[in-house]
Image (cartoon, rainbow, N blue to C red; front, side, top):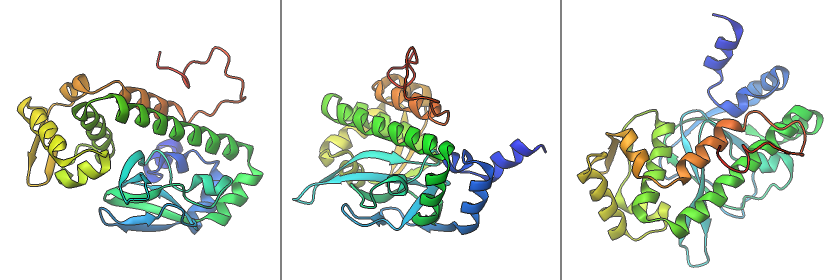
Length: 254
């Protein structure tokens, strides 16, 4: 097995795998494996971050929380990224509540070593800025999706994103959980799930969801899933300059 193949197999988190080799080795020596249960809180909104989390099989959900306690997902993070990268660059306060949306392994590293690597490496500076820009684009696309698309379309987008991260495994979600994440009422979520099941796109029974027709689910989803996926597929190649003349990948899907 050649070296690139070995590294791809070892480093399950794509963002961490894109670090310069020396920086990655230093961080890997300090990172600790951790697995949290579904729904567990990683950090509260307004909380001070002390660690950065690199998912290796789990998915983290970023929730905007209002004064009355209601919340809605504005972004999610899988093995393509990390939670706490902003803290390694600038602020150490979390803007959102971060919870576990899909159980699985992740690595946790204290912020200070990552700050040190970021400050001395132009490569990491470009990489972190590129990832932060891409995550922000997901937030903006999610805002538009939540405002303009139907509950069924939004559920399709969300299920496709979870299906990507879960690698085809059965998803364990109740209607109550989906309603909270999507900022919708339970009745609307139930009707949307029933519609998708009647179209034979998913199966749903006692809190277990499974995608049966991936292509069909993509066909009835809104455009938001494809837009966000294309941006994340491209982010690991940071721009060499902030000038993006004639480079359309960050602004629209070709």
